Structures are given as C-alpha cells and as structure tokens.
Image 1 (cartoon, rainbow, N blue to C red):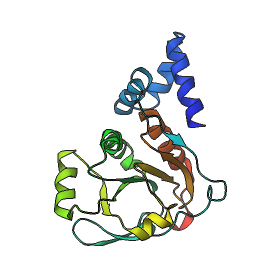
Image 2 (spheres, rainbow, N blue to C red):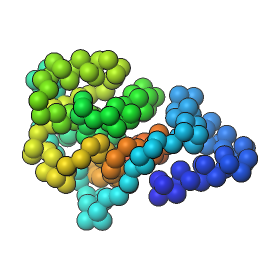
Image 3 (cartoon, rainbow, N blue to C red):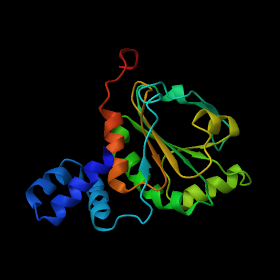
Image 4 (cartoon, rainbow, N blue to C red):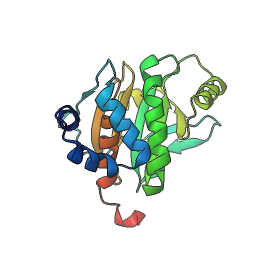
Length: 203
C-alpha cells in the first residue's frame, strides 16, 4: 500500500499535477514536506520492501524488556497509548544511518501528537557509551535501547538491518519495512500508526 501511495505522489509530480501534490505536502507540515519532496526527487538507491506476514498484522507487538543507554529497563508496554516506530539498527550500518534523519524529524514533529520513535541498537561489540556518542553525533532525539538475541527472535529472527516496525496506539503491529525506507514511506506508515484510536485506559 505504501509503495502504491509513493508512486501516486511521484506520478502527480511527473505529470505536473501541482495542485493535488501541494495538498498532500501542505497537510504534512513544513518539516515533513521536505521529506516528501526529497523522496519524490531523490529516492534512495535501496528501496525498502514493506511486508508483514498476515499472521502477525493486527496482532500485539511482542513485549520486550531492554536496557537504555543509562542501564534503565524500558518496556514496550511503557509506550501504550502512543504510536511507536520501532527501528532495529546498528552503528556500523550505513543504510541505518541514512534513515536516522527521517526518524529525528518524525519525533520532532509528531512526538507532541503521541508518536514515539525507538531505536534498538543491535551492535554486538559497541559499548553503551559508544552507541550514545554515535547517536549524539547523528542528532538523535528519540529513545535508544540496547538490543538482544531474544528481542531479535521475538521480531522474526532479525538477520539484516535496518528493519522497522510500526505499532499502533493500542499496541498492534501495523507495518514492517525491510531495508532502507524512503522518507515518504516512513511518514505514511507513522501516520497509519497514529491514526489508530487511543485505548480507553490510556486516554
């Protein structure tokens, strides 16, 4: 679905349908508008494959208990009532680095609306301090957690990076992106997660 929408935006751009294209951009806000235009004009060389097994779509996102970079335990359930962008990445992953500015912009613009970006670092050899330094240089403004083999198994035996899951406000899996995402894919998937109703207990 996201691939189709992305092509629709590009088609509007290529066909000169500026009015419809500007409606899409205006509705997205000024910062994210730049993400859309960059995606249209300069798509990333490695397009992502967005797919989530039908057995899992609409099912609860697996709970986890991971340490942040200060050693504090963080649970996925701590974010219940928020839409979550769950990005598996590593400091050595060039494709992961390419995506990080889009997540920074999402957190900046949509955090007040209830979006939480969480980066799960899957580095095997980097220390928390090294990961923190890397994130700081990248201008990361969202939560970074230390990954584990168990969480990799919970989320489909992750064996390549980056992989991003989009979780609705009520904790259900909405979409998964394999590989480097284009900016408009990140935006539209996040909006899908945000569009889900907030659970009554979280209101």
